[in-house]
Length: 198
Image 1 (cartoon, rainbow, N blue to C red):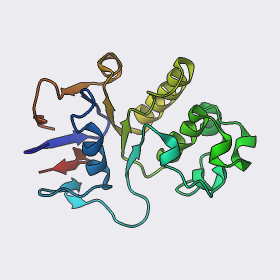
Image 2: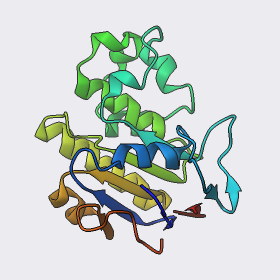
Image 3: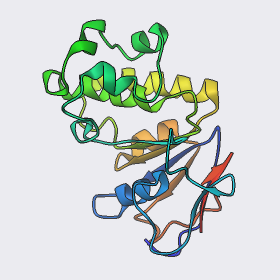
Image 4: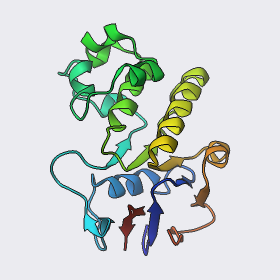
């Protein structure tokens, strides 16, 4: 991707759709600070993303097993960034006994629930969901999306949905960027509390 100018407000749900190979995941990693742009800037409220402590821009990966420390128990993974109460645990369908297990003792869907919940810390202002439900069964997908949408709406979190599933994006997003129709992202819109990429 080149010549990207993308802004997003809090309380906005934006879909970035396109087939594999169009740079969707790389774009999400750039916005979350996991990759550094060759040129330009990623800004939140006019400032660079913090390099230490809890980042207000959280990225949820498609493959949860790649996003956790296999040597940590699930309780340590979950509580690393914040301490969700029972309402959140119940909302994500997390069984309390899972907290004492290791990541390899859970299914992909069970593990993804932890990754999603971990990203919803009280200081999260923008949530980037990179194909977060693609590998999950239909029931788990619905449960996770319903809960996430409820939380982001209540707390006015900006949500970026990165997906090849155009139907999903059309159903939940207020605005979409279709990479098949554009060789690069052209949207007068990243972060206002704001994240901005020039």
